[in-house]
Length: 76
Image (tube, rainbow, N blue to C red; front, top):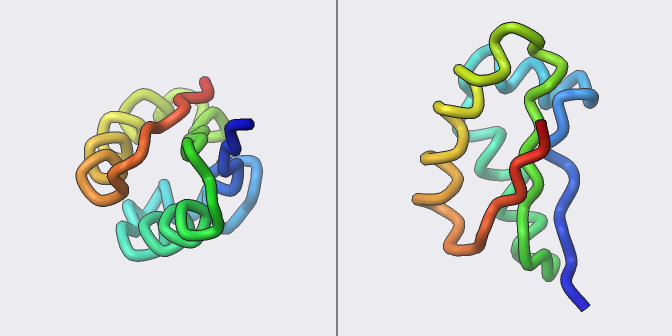
């Protein structure tokens, strides 16, 4: 069984705000907590940013890849 951490979803107001502000500390804290709880993948969704989704993902994906050591699931 594979577990996918789903908490980095921009439908959650706190994540939406973190993506807008480029809050590295929040995204990494949330992602690491999911990884440490056993997630094999971290889902990343920035769809609520609408026209800024691609730009937010271009910022967040390299950050998370560099820091987590597990694959991401890009949810657009």
